[in-house]
Length: 309
Image (cartoon, rainbow, N blue to C red; front, side, top):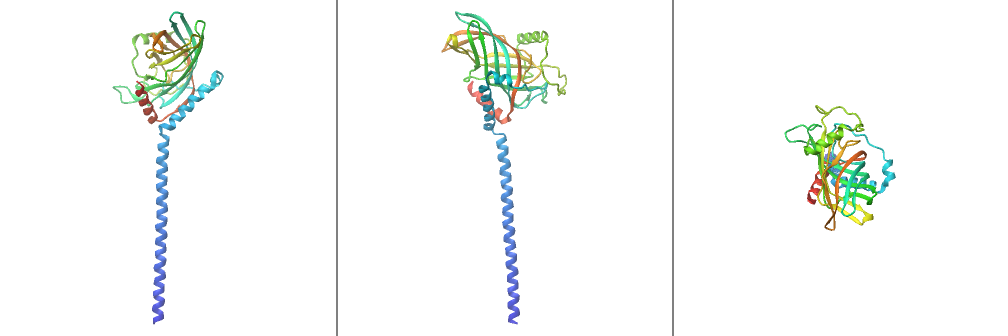
């Protein structure tokens, strides 16, 4: 009898131990799965944060600008143009455009000359929003904030020698594109230029994304620049921003779509006014580089620009 009791007790003890081991194993496995699940969630949030991290966007934009600065004229000329769709509202991004324009300068005591400039311009455009009075965002209703993030334009004047135009990095160069108003004089001049233009902008066809897609958008920018004329020993900046205006069918404007600056701006060096930028006209431009950026980067970049004002 005692032997039977002992055997029964031993069997119950072994069964209890086996159940305890299974419980311990189940708990351990549950902890592993919880740890894995938490790690996946953390990784997902980390990836989302990285994807929208303004610093990663800043690195992309900085790399883009550095590529253009080191490419030189031959490297810029070798870049293939990127087709831009007409009447299409883009997402936030930075576009680099190869450009050709003419600007007229008067240097006090020396004279006046028109200078053809070629090179590149990099412009950031933000997330589109609906203009006042509209709820939908499409070609006919959208407004995008823009900012120049890089520029290198060069030419040679028979009167002044080499001329270089770049951004004044201490002051903003900002604007808007889309459903905005332009000064009456600028709009009239742009319409006259468009009527006399024999070649339309080279842009790929797009399915209309809004009613009346033939309505041109408008672009206005106030750009602070530095103008260098080394033969004259002049390193000048604009006394106030140069106002540029365009009527556009693409964002950014490409091809022979004209942009004009029709208001004279004085140029100064070391606090002295020494010259005048009389005006300018963009003859041709095409996109050669593009990077997309997050809406968060656009907000951060806009805040930095606002701090310069």
